[in-house]
Length: 342
Image (cartoon, rainbow, N blue to C red; front, side, top):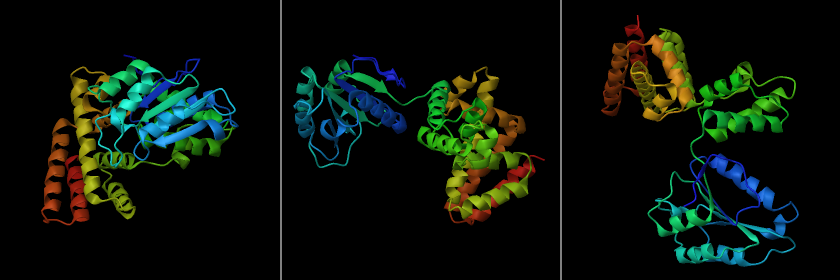
């Protein structure tokens, strides 16, 4: 079985006859797909020698018949099979009964002049399936899900370089804290910052603060900080801003509870001697989210965090049973936790 290359964007030459790109980072899948297509075909050849088939809409045999035909006015052709759900445990909403044995036959004798590019933007493959074992044995497999912070930084640095801008580590950390580790959103934000800065100004924390977007999770992080610093008026103002932005109060409550829990767990594991990356792996969040949570532990005692979590659960119950208005309940929650920090 071929060992999946985890978030490795390098392409060996000559091109493989079959590629499988799978994982949860759709931005990376699209980037990798473009790299392979650009390597196989020049711009003029794409009109004649490039085809794409969505496996939730098109029969597999049509795509493979295309793959087996010789290129027209060129040395190579590329056939893309997108959304190959049949390689995963996913149940796709489609009326097409894919003939998987047809792909099994193709894998035995892949066309020499064709690059067959299979994408499966799903969390995992179903390795119990015969077809998955056959694809992994034959194809060049790339798992595009988990990124180290170093890889993430280099990808975004390259995005900035495309605009002639300089991406800094300081700006990177500020972006991660604002957006989270969502590669597609991060790439869009870096592009926006790069257009703003040009070649004259580096993309640093100040630039990100000036023009960067903030995710809902980041606003909740700021809300927790304001509560714990007893900035009750600021916290209530931010809460009202989020509600005006059509954020559902119950969703805000759930995110508040989640942030308190992350801080509690991060502090607990740090005292037990775990590293930042180990803590991230333990609680299932990005290492930078752990770094921020550990910064927040300086504002919290364990009893205060337990109180905050208990109040979140109590508030959730009151809202869901109709005992309290949603917004008023959140306001009282913030005031209660803020008073307890005194």
